[in-house]
Amino acid sequence: MGHLKQRTLVTARERLRDQVAHALRAAMISGELRPGQVYSAPGLAEDFGVSATPVREAMLDLTREGLVEPVRNKGFRVTEVTEKDLDQYTEIRALIEIPTVGQVTRTAAHDDLEALRPAAEEIVRAAREHDLIGYLEADRQFHLSLLALSGNERLVETVGDLRKRTRLYGLSALDERDRLIPSAEEHLELLELMLAGDAEGAEACMRRHLGHVRSLWAKAE
Image (cartoon, rainbow, N blue to C red):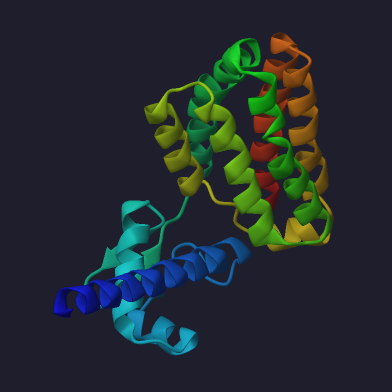
């Protein structure tokens, strides 16, 4: 019984750590935590109403994702992403995702593609209802699920890591001006092209979508 109790405690601790990490990502997305600024674990813990331990643990997770970097005796600095970084990340994503979309269009089963529709519709709903966290989560789910149809797990991991490093700063300002809706609707357009078996059209749509996303980053900055 002692071992079972310890296992339950560890699970609860990990759950709190994940919740704090999620809250920190949300704060970065909304702009509450600013790039280049240093934040202490005790200070953030006070804001969240938890002890400093899960905050430190969550920050270490974000460090591995490249979202923050430790500052000795001070806390953690939110990583700054330069225009050059964004250009390079977008270039890598284009090299991976555009041909993969074409491949998946030619090889994936109709039902597997249709299974992407709920995520695509959720992206549009979230954009229209100003649900930023829901928007990014549905966007992540759609893109990574699409890429998973290629059968290449390492490819999915690579793009997932790139997406974490290119979160959208200033997303709230774009949302207030409804600038996210056109990008959101491109997911449904892409899905329809893939369902129609139009590999070239799907690749062109993905190329345009990535360019659209990059322009949103520029406007957010």
